[in-house]
Amino acid sequence: MEPMDQAQARVWLATAVEEARAGLAEGGIPIGAALYGADGTVLGRGHNRRVQDDDPSMHAETSAFRAAGRQRTYRGTTMVTTLSPCWYCSGLVRQFGISRVVIGEATTFHGGHDWLAEHGVEIVLLDDPECTDLMRDFIKTNPALWNEDIGD
Amino acid sequence: MEPMDQAQARVWLATAVEEARAGLAEGGIPIGAALYGADGTVLGRGHNRRVQDDDPSMHAETSAFRAAGRQRTYRGTTMVTTLSPCWYCSGLVRQFGISRVVIGEATTFHGGHDWLAEHGVEIVLLDDPECTDLMRDFIKTNPALWNEDIGD
Image (cartoon, rainbow over all chains, first blue to last red; front, top):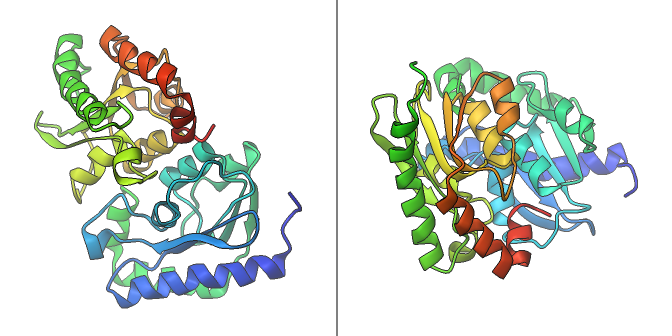
């Protein structure tokens, strides 16, 4: 697998940001994700659904993974997410052998992406101000909901 | 939290085994789980649903977690599972601060429970022959499906 070009990563991140904004518009937690195949097509996309579905298991990344349906292999796939993946979503990436994670930001929350890098996952951290602003504003207005979502 | 009594752990394991057998009867992967509250009540229970729902995100533990709905805290809760939790499910336990994991067996698959123990989760490994037989028979008959479920 070729190392990822930052400009390409930003194009893919836009899909995850769209998902985050859709979640926010529904009254949910604004985190979005998309799983891209090795050929650059979107296999699945989704956003956090804790509030909308009362479903604590649907983080953005698990939602995108679920939407992609059953796959024989995740080799060469990329999980694109607006926020550094928590341990739950990092565990998903490691277990299923997702090859790369593109991350919008890790400023408002630092999950398990260093651990993923140690275990051979390519990490592209974009430090995107739009993603940071989305989460910063949300956490400020909804601290209890955010703490619930990360088990704090 | 008091350290868990093995006899009590075996009583709780029976709930997870019931779930695993229900999954097998549906034509699914025979792994079951239940999330017990600090007060000893079942908050949620479930089994692997990859085959039944074409849903790769529903491992036994995530299924039980989902069935429990939104919880303000997981302090004092116990995840009971027939099989050592994979990285995805171990990440779930760590992120949400589930206090204890009761495991039927870790012979047919060794997941992330040592990592959880290092991070302060109480691990009760029962080495239960019924759980081992369930998985051994299943893997022997359905190796491709099993490999798909663990991303191998």
